[in-house]
Each structure stands twice: as structure tokens, then as C-alpha cells.
Image 1 (tube, one colour):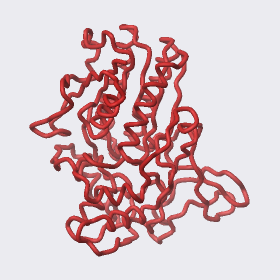
Image 2 (image 1 turned 180 degrees about the vertical axis):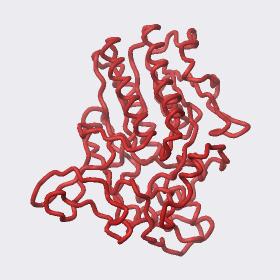
Image 3 (image 1 turned 30 degrees about the vertical axis):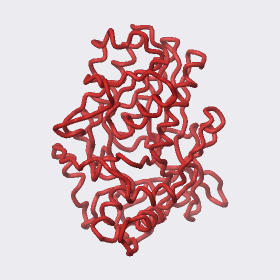
Image 4 (image 1 turned 60 degrees about the horizontal axis):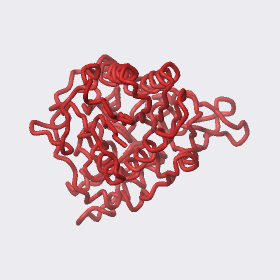
Amino acid sequence: MRVLLTGAAGFIGCAVAEALGSRGHDVVAVDVLLTEAHGDEPTGPEGLHRLDVRQADKWGELLRGVDVVCHQAALVGAGVDVADLPAYASHNDLGTATLLATMAREGLDRLVLASSMVVYGEGRYECRDHGGQRPVHRSAEALARGDFDNRCPRCGRPLTWALVDEDAPLDPRSSYAASKVAQEHYTAAWARQADAAAIALRYHNVYGPGMPRNSPYSGVAALFRSAVEDKRPPEVFEDGGQMRDFVHVSDVARANSLAVEAVAARSPGAQRAYNVCSGEPVSILDVARYVCEGGEGFEGEPRVSGRFRPGDVRHIVASPERARRELGLTAEVPPGKGLRAFARAPLRASLTSPTRAGAARAARSTPGGRDRDDATESGGRRWTA
């Protein structure tokens, strides 16, 4: 098949382009190659078209003969400041809407969309006495005294985490998360109105070779790696018991290949979402331990600091079952193996991204001297569209 791939020069996009090519697909690679994301000498897959997805209505000839569009281009990051709302709305939502309208005009009716776990907000929780519960936000006062658990709103006991499936309510808690929900909603509307078919892939914490070094997208795994390289103990926020799913970029790329092939055979008129995850929950403390164990010449241990960022979710762990059952996706790289190898994997060069005052404020301390770098995703934003 002929697949148009947006965001093809990004961390995930490069891996997707390689995976699609290895399965015999003809890839039409597109990326705007913004300096803020790619530096002054950007590179990408061979034959890359340097185009902005927000101007997809001008692509015309490029879309002729395309069977499936695989849409990776996005502005990503924690989205912790309201000043970033216009940027997310422009690159993610307007870009997606323009692409979808152009696809309808050109008669293209198959799409794979890169979405994210952030659409869920908090994960899924259960009380031993009262069953499933949706916890309220953890208060700054509770976090400051070291009470990190979500508690049952009925009895006050700590809640236990459970796997989140794709039918969980959407609860975006940042500008980035809101933009990803909007992308999914635009795509679902397009599928119904244009009699088309779409798959949304909700990535969990992606890591692996080629990841940007110390960028807002890099997240906690890269931050831990940087500390180990500097022979510093990685700092773990809260008590380190936060549960997440870390998925290797090779598994994410394979998920896209499977989705591209699956959506081509789908009946029109519907969108289906899938978690893309390892299926092996891991604590943030164990993530730090794995990176320490894989670090060359490092013999230290992670440091659990108790620091926190108000608004962070406690646990978010995905169910892989729908993707396994319907796409045939089973992750091949377990977190323990992948994160140890990641400690020595080649990364992209560090970029100094110009950001607005809002993104700068996101990296500074909160009241009480609590640093606002997230335990799973650092503050600020990264341009990848």
C-alpha cells in the first residue's frame, strides 16, 4: 500500500517509517521540520516532503494514489500552562481538521491517528468495599504530608489501581490532553460524515533509541538516563509507587503497521481506539532502577525525594487486550529489558527550544519549593508537527 506518514522525521515517526517500509509499504514522508524540534540541520527519511499539516489543503498531488494516511504530526508535551492552548489548538486540532477535510475532498477514507494515554486523565481505581471509584483530585495538602494515594470518596481507604480499557471515560487534564481528545473527536466525526474508517492509537509512555535527549517530550526515562550518565542518582518523585506502562518505540512502530493494514480492511463509518502498551505495569521507582542497572559505570541507587507536582495522576496503567485481540499486537520488548538497554541507547542531540513564558514557568518551582518536572513527563512542550 501507499501510506502518507505525517511527522515522519520525529522520534516515533522515523520508527514508523522504517517499520512500514520493512513490510513492503510505499511511504510518502511528510514533516514540517521545525527548528524547535529538529535543530538547524534537520534530517528525515529519504524523499521527505517538508510541509505543514495545517496547509494540507494545498498538498493536492501528494495525496494522489495514497491508500492510508498515518498521522503522527503533533505538538506534544505536558501542556501545563494555559498560555500554550493556542499552540496546541493550531498544530494538533487545526492541523488534523485540515488534513481530514483534504482527505475527504481527495476521496481518501482510511486514517491511523496517533493519540495518547493522556486522554484518560486518572486511571481506573477500585475500593475493596465499594467497587469501582473515580477519585477526586489529590490535594496539595495531602501530597505535602506524603499521602500520595487516591482514596475512596465513600470510606477514605486507599484505592487500588486497575487496568484502563479503551471504553474508560475521557478526562483531559492539560491543554495537550484536550487537544488529543479533540483530534479523536474530529476523526470520529470525519469517519461518520465521510463514510470513512479510522483507528486511534493511544500511546502510553514511549521510549527507545533515537529519543530526543532532555526535551519536554523525553519524559522520565530520559531524565533518569541523563542523571545516570552524569553519575548522579536519579530523583524519583512522590514515593516512587506511581504505576505506568512503558512501551518500546519498536512496538509502537509495529502497532502502526498493524493498524495501517487493519484499517484498510475496515468497514467505513467508524473509529476504533486501541491502547498501545507493553502490558507489563511498572512503578516509576523500578523504571529508575532499571535505568541505573543498565547505565555504564554507574553503581548508585535512585533517590526517592517525596517531591511532587500538583495535578499529576497517581496511576495510569493500560489494558492491552483489545489491541491483542483485534490487531494482533503483543509487545515484544518487556520494560525490564528495554529500559536497561535504553540506558546505553543512542539518543538524538539535545535541543534548546525557545518557549514562551508559560512553558518556562512550567519548569520552575511550585509553591513550597516543589519542582514541577513531572514524574512521567517533563514540563513544557516540544514541536514535532
